[in-house]
Structures are given as C-alpha cells and as structure tokens.
Image 1: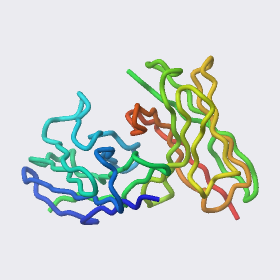
Image 2: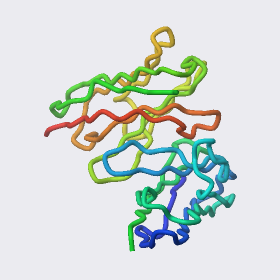
Image 3: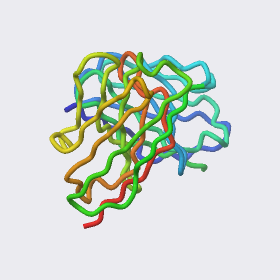
Image 4: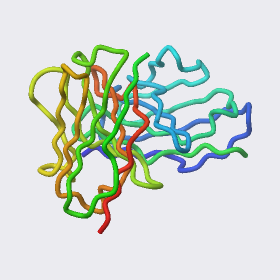
Length: 107
Length: 118
C-alpha cells in the first residue's frame, strides 16, 4: 500500500497570503495525484488531478506541482472561502489512498 | 450538471447489513467508473471500493473485502454498496464519487451516514 503523508497538519495563514501544502508518497506515483478541498459538513471537492491539471471550475489561484513522490498544492492568495481541509490522493496503485489532510486556518 | 444522490444509511447493530444506493444524473453513467469513499467522524477520507465503467473487475480496501459488494445498474443510473457483517469501525459518512480515467474523484455526492452500534 502506498502511504501518503501530508504536511503540515495545520497551517495558519492570513487572507491574501500564499499557502503551500505538501504531500509525499511512500513510493513513486508518477503524476497520478489529486487534491481535494473539504469544508465542514460538506463533501470534498476536486481541485487538481494529474498533479497539476485544474478542472475548469477551479480558480487559477490553486496550482499543483510535483511528480514521483513529492507534490505541492499552492494557493497563491488565500480568500476567506479557502479556509478548509485539503487532502491529496494517489491513484497509481490499488488500494487508492489519501493523505491525512492539512487544515488551513485563519491566522 | 453532474449530480449524485446517496441513500440507505442509518443505524444498524454490529453484524447487521445495509445497502447503500447512489443515483446519478447529468452525465453518462454507463461510461463512468464509480466509487465509494468513507469518512469516519472527525477523521480523514478513506477509499472503500471502485467499479469500472465496463467489465466485471471490482476493487476493495482490505478492511471490507469479503463483507462489502459494489455493483451498478446502468439501466437505472444507480450505484450500490451492499454492506454485510458490519462493525463499529465501519461507522462513517459514505460518499459516492464519479471517477475518471485515472480513478480520481471528480464529482461527489452529499454522503449518507452509517452508524454501527456495538
């Protein structure tokens, strides 16, 4: 099983600042990495797939990078609606696995 | 707009069974891989099971193998999860999710809560 490790567990950021979230895989997943955002009481929402591809409805301030074992989600200028929990997920191998999440909170 | 609507959750005793359903609309269901993902209270996301658009292969996380069965009825645009021999650790919100070519989850339902009492 591929273990996904996210860091930090919590991130305190002021509105308008940049947030950088990390995700590391225990073995290479190539570019088969997705990111999701989840707000309390809501289902997750897809932000990024293929490590860096953004669905058309996702704002450009969200960007993904990396390949192999190390990945980054960057939120260029945090808006109030971006405070949430973020998860990474690999889909290179079965079982599909998620990271433990990074909670982005208001500083 | 693609939408997924789960149902079938509830309170069940340990060892009991439930069947979850997920009705899809707004996209071509028969051409889409489908998945179940769960989230225990206050915890992170855990993939449970997947079924591709065609073929008979199904996939499960080890902890549910032999107890859960995923299936789909393309004529009814519906995904199912039959859950038997339920355990307290199966307590979670269960989400239905539309997959894509690479088994990322591009559309999610609102979730249905399953509580297993011991």
